[in-house]
Image 1 (tube, one colour):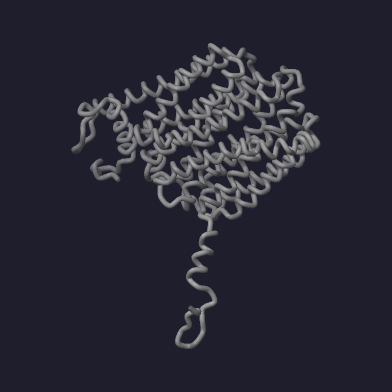
Image 2: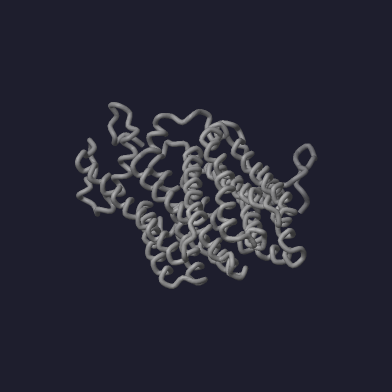
Length: 451
């Protein structure tokens, strides 16, 4: 059958079938962000592999600790000072967060290029931690961009989970080109591959939509919602989890620095698997329990696991602890994001997530500083993790009970289910959600009318 023509005798240049085929190559805004994220995560893994055979592992342990502490403080201090001021400005600039992502990737590619000739120089330390600081800045920007590349708030948890899965897959996959590059040109060749990976990530980020996160400063209602009891308790627990991640990262880095290089490779591989498991586990947990119980569950798992591995120690214990913390931090972060979405429905998503992410990164630095300054045995380090997780667990439980008692002593006006009619844990969950909403209740408005 020939092509159809209209009454004037001309035929269209393209058919509906052809247009449909072209649409198959169209990438959604989230897919564009994810593509950039994969190359960035691969670059991070490549830099870690390159540094495993660098000057850092040839220094005297005491010299290395003080240099690491100094440059960790110097590189993270600007983020702590500038982020509270530049964040709102970038939120209100069209494409501001996207340009922060592009800049973070591009500057990391440039720093990797400079590092090529400095692997045996003391300049390696400020350069390596500059890459680390830019990675933290990228995490802040990504947290603010994700809500702008999905259609509904219900897709946020799934989107964050997918990005975590991609990070977990990118790390082991990066080991393949890293191994080939190492055989060809040692660590400098691995850094060159990392430079290319970051450059591709920056180019891919150019396709991320230039959306505007917010047109105006945060309102009083948004600020009140983000200071609700439920969110404050969850953010404190999540902050301590992030501190544990920073502590374990540098603790194992110093513990394994005199071991064969493949020991670190095993720990990195198990960490990647743990991140994948955490990303897959979080949605399933959320379907069977509220977000508060998810955080309590992962904290309890951390306490038990740390006590068990402290008894055994060694490479197996180190790898197991790294895997558990990867699962816990991934699942906990997804639970926290979902809780903020639930209890602060009116707060600007991008601004709130970016604000919390900055705080979490600062706690990560505090946790990282401890093993840098204090040399401790493997068993003691694991007991520190158990103690920190136990403190976070019991503080969260105590805060929930205090909020529940406050709601029982001062019940809200209007119809509803009283806490005594429900399971205590369920009541605690409802209490936290209600406390957040009543904090932003306009004068004279019935709380049952707040949506």
